[in-house]
Image 1 (cartoon, rainbow, N blue to C red):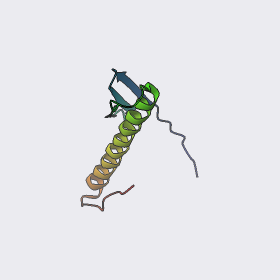
Image 2 (image 1 turned 45 degrees about the vertical axis):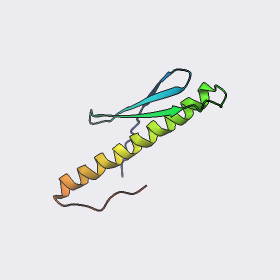
Image 3 (image 1 turned 135 degrees about the vertical axis):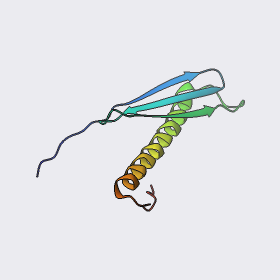
Image 4 (image 1 turned 90 degrees about the vertical axis):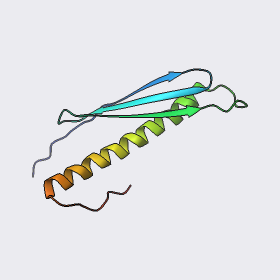
Length: 91
């Protein structure tokens, strides 16, 4: 049995102001498609300004959305190949 190693590189970019952090995630798949997702975080006015925490929250939310989009893509491909509606893929 032969195994082929495949790697994905996921890009995360952040933009911030004093109250908000936005994250954009991108993964390019071996078939040439790109899957994108976004996340955000808002600092409560009484919290101290900790940009790293905002990045972690916004980044996690973007990666979570990215994961769900990849699951949906896989699910749609299973349905297209099989010609039937398959069971949802749960995480």
